[in-house]
Length: 320
Ligand code: AHM
Ligand code: MG
Image (cartoon, rainbow, N blue to C red; front, side, top):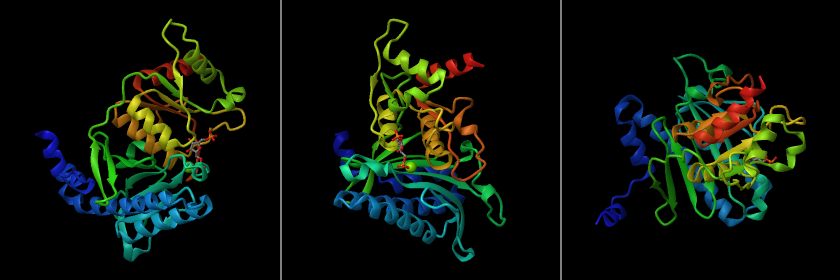
């Protein structure tokens, strides 16, 4: 009975990551310790969100919890949070080799009505033994070692990639453990859903306008796509990853760089998409090739199923 075997052979996220890293014995322990501190922050938030804490409290609380958990892991040197203007440099006695960029509670405008929200994170490895500087995190997304998000929804789901595929874990509240529930996630090659804030349509550029027009009135005789937009990046990306399709936060005349932040929103989600067989594009390049110049830089982003992103790439290419 393989179902029974699975029920009794619990693949926790810690066990999974230790197995996965067995070919890097030198960093095995350190990475799983770091991850267990991230997981602790996620469990805390999951429980706080379920208790119905107010948005204002949760925003600040979640940032404090993650910063403290990450510093006390003893494995980090630089932390970049969406909530803090400046990066946090960890004091020398608690320093380790990882840099963590994160959005502790993304989609926070959705808290007070109970819509899914989440935490997004990306992890870089500091190069050699040197005094950490901001340059250590102003790195293209392709240099990330790992990325993930945790979604606080009807269940609490953590999706992680350490650079060899994408796996999803669901919190079993009675065990207090994240258990592997979505092994080796692959995004469908093409999807039937597009996800964008159409309220911004009057300010879009031509390629985005044409793309969305084609989702609704396909010129090749295929069926129109469905529109789904939650307004919580973690939830919109999670659906895109599982069901396929495309998520867009394009540039517009009012926000020429879009809205989403490169380091802790665009990069981690792009990393996951590529690892799941999809693509992520900024409107002029592969998203993970972008080199950020400042911590809270923004970028337009189009990510999702391989073939759907191919179409928007072609529209931008035709513009040039
Ligand atoms: P936030 O950091 O203020 O929560 O904003 C980020 C959120 C994303 O989760 C979501 O994709 C986007 O903002 C939605 O923006 P809009 O309301 O403009 O559609
Ligand atoms: Mg955010």
